[in-house]
Each structure stands twice: as structure tokens, then as C-alpha cells.
Image 1 (cartoon, each protein chain N blue to C red):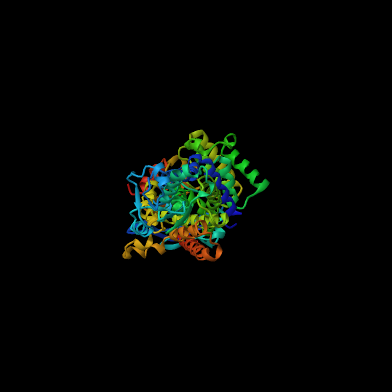
Image 2 (tube, chains in turn blue, green):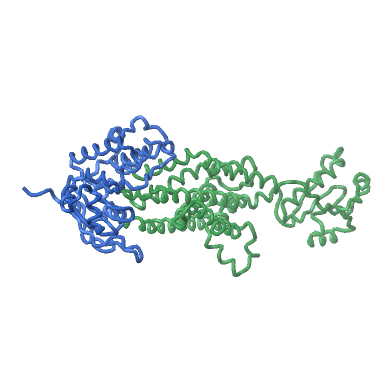
Length: 241
Length: 342
């Protein structure tokens, strides 16, 4: 049996901002239906890489392919859900109005729209706060609403930049349960994080440091190969410490 | 569909932000009212000349007043009038007075007519036919200073506030990351710009209608032409303000930097809007006028409101304003390439 298809293929991607090289010749394949974690300290280039996958940036050299098509493409954008590091919500509007706005951008309307709004809000446990103004939301609630918006149009690929920052452990657990549920439905998830214990929950990990991909593998593999007990130690070994 | 969503969102945001909405509507009303009161005040005492003044009148008024000059014949009075020594004079032919005014300054006109009427009033008691006839060297009756520059100010305030608020709201879209989020959806770049133009356009229509109606019907600003033409010009002007605001917002990193564009981009437009006589502006500066949207809008608004002209006289201004908007929109769409290439 052939292994699951590559859903995302990053080929020799480099990115330069002026003189600063942010990404150095990254090549990586992400399989359909897996949760892939991009692990690295802040400033390593994680956000730059996922932005390219979301179509918001282009490589200086190299190419990104999503579902066998070259990014950026408007057709692909519809199949991707992207949640940025900043919450990017309209504070003057209620949660519902924010959801209505973004779902309309994806062409969801009427009953279907309402149904999706209810579903995603239940998933992030915000159903009781649907009519509240976003400016009255706490930081964690905003983060969850932001996630809910990324899920609205049931994307095939979900790109989440630091999705669980500022969310308490209980809720983080339930959010990860939601991720697994999505994965079981066939969604491919890319999650960036700098929290090591969160990295353990991913199917596979890519470690990024100073713009270079230093290791790829399942959390177990990475630990075994480096004889480490934790991902953190493994990261230090690969980082040359 | 996507544009509609964007329009609804923008209108919702404006309605939610009561203070900004208040600023957009009431600030222009407040300033226009103040200008109305300042410039249509009647405190000025006119300098009046009397020619062939009958004895019966001399008895009744204090001719020794320093503002009053007596003339032996009309020619002398006319000379003084031309050199602006006096603001106007009264001539008596067979006991019936007629007034001749210099006329270039509406404030002075009003004051002079009022003064003369007050003085002559006691004479009218038993002779109702003594209503004086009024002639002007320049200008016309009934026109106030406010009427002359009111249309320009109407345009200016709309430009000013729409520029600022559209610019700031697009800037916020950029700094809070919602622009990035919008671009991570299938929303096209032209749809973003169009949505903004229409969203703010609808609001500007309401704003412009209220402000213009207030100026015309409450403050009694001169209005010779069609109200709809006024709205058309104001709307087109607001489109240029909006698209220019959005464009310049990409050169600002925060709200304060957006405000810094006011003295550079907005205020200088006043100088070329016809508030000051364009002929008297230094020649090396005069060429700037035709590059500012307010120049055309003010011209059109004055044509409609003061001169009562119609489409034939304003269509050139309409097309130039449209051209500005379309140009700025295209540049905006190109500028958005910075955030997403497609």
C-alpha cells in the first residue's frame, strides 16, 4: 500500500528580506491528514514559512505546492484556513457579526452559514458568548474566536500560527481534541509552536532554527535518534548545542 | 456577495462607533454654524454718503456722525465710492431716495442697507411709497459672505473627515492584522477597495445629505441649483478623499502618522479651492491647484449653489473627480500586491 499522498510540498524555498536571509533552502513534504508541527524559537522563520503556504507571501527562490498546485493561487486559498499570530478580529462587532462577515467571504450564506457558526462556536466553547462584542472578550476568548473563524469554511488544509498561546491547559486540551477530530475527518493541520510539550502531540515535527530546517520526524524518532528523553533535549542536540 | 459582506461590516463598524459617527456629522455642522454666525454678523457700521439731502431729513438725523459724509453732487460721491472711501450713498430725487452701493463685500452691503433703512424709516410714516431703490456697483443683493465660501467649506469638511476616517480605519485593518486575514480568504483585492468605497460611500451620502440640508435650509446658505447635483459632487469628492486616505494610510504606521498628513495633503487644498482668489496666488504656486480634487469640487459646488448652473457647466468637474477616484483605486489595488501577489 502506498503511503498517504503529500498534501503540501515545499521545494528549496528561500526567503530574503533585504540582506537578512529568513528561510534557507527549506524542503519539506507534509502528508494528507496529519498534524504537522513546526517547532522553533521565535524569529526562526516559522511565520514566514506558513504565510507562504497561506498565499500571503512568496519565496525569493523555490516553490510551494499545495494539493499538487503551485501557491499562491486564489483557487487554493479557498481550501486553506489560516489563523495568524495576531487575532485579527473586529472589536467593534460582536462575535456573531465577525463570523457572519468572514463566512460570507467564503460564500457561506443562509442556513448553512448559521449552522457552521453554531458548530465552530461549540467547538471552541464560546456558544454562550456569541452576541458579545469582541472588544469585551478576554485574550483567550479572542484566540478561540480567531480559531473558530479559520474553521468556518471547513478547509482541507488548516494553518495555525501559535494557536494555543494564552489559552489555559484545560482549554488547550479540548482544542487539541478538536484538532484530532479534524484530522480524523481528513484535514491536514500545520501548527507552529515554541512550546515543547505541545510539539509532542503532533504526528510529525519539523524543527526550525535560524531559517534552516534542522530535523524532521515523529516526536519518538527525534527523541530516539538523539538519545533524548524530551523533545527539548532533542532540539538542543540538533541545534548543535 | 463578498463585497456586500464587506459593505455591511463597514457600516456596522461606523454605526457602532457613535463618537466617530458624531464627528462625521456634527463637527461639520458645528463649524459651519460658527462660521455662519461669525461672517453674517451685523456689527459693522457702514460709511454712507448723502447727496442732495433734503432739509426735512437733516432735521431728523444726526448728520454730524463721523460715518456720514455730505456731497454736493452725485459725481463726487461716485468717486469716493470707487476709491472705497464710502460703502454707499443715498441720492434724493424729488424727495424719493435711491441707494448706490459699492457691493463687493456682502457683509458691508447688508450693513449699509440696514443702516439706511433704519435712518429713513421715520420719513416713511405717511408716505409708504418711499421704499428706496438699491443699485450695486458689484455683486447683488441677498448674497452673504457665507454664501460665497459656504460651498467650498461644505466640500472641504466632507473631504477632511472622510479622508481621515477612511484612512485610519484602513490603517487599523493593516495594523491589527485583519487585512492579512482578509487576504487569506478568497476576497479579491479589487473587491476590498470597492467594498471600502461603497461602504463609506453609502455613509457619506447620508452624511452629505444631512450637512448640506442643514447648511441650505437651516443656515440659509445660498442655493440656486439642484440639491441632487450638490450631493453628486460631494459624493464624488468623498470618493477621492476615501481612496486617497486609504492610499496614504499605507505610508503611515499609526494613527498619529495618519494625522500628520492633514497639514501636508488636506490643508493646502483650501488655498486652491477658490476660498482665496486664485489670480492673486503667486504664479509659481498656482499650478498646484489643478492637481487637487477640492479645486474641482469647489468650482462645481459654487457653480451649482451660487450660480445655479446645471450639468452642462459641471460635467467636466464630475469627470475629473471620477478620474481622480479611479486613479487612486487602481493605485490602491496595486499597493495591496505588497500583501498578496494575486
